[in-house]
Length: 109
Image 1 (cartoon, one colour):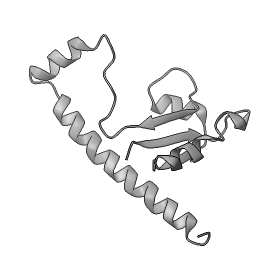
Image 2: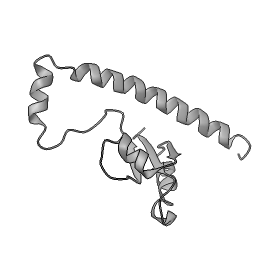
Image 3: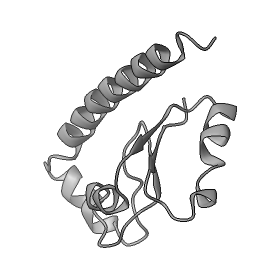
């Protein structure tokens, strides 16, 4: 599974994100909608409203200038603990999304 796609529901015009559920289904990525771009941006730790994010199983990819952070992890930082917590949370999210999707599609298929 490539990741979980989270799409904001208050995107205007909606044509900007209309294609994303179909694209997610093409690659077997579960997707879900949230109410607000502002809340999605805050959850993604950005200062701007965000229309869509993709949560990856391995977590956040390191940025180009993140070499200093890697050294911290090697010296006994909490990087491994954070990765384990992320993996657990990600697995729970995937189960929840799949369960909700199956519930919503029960009468349609």
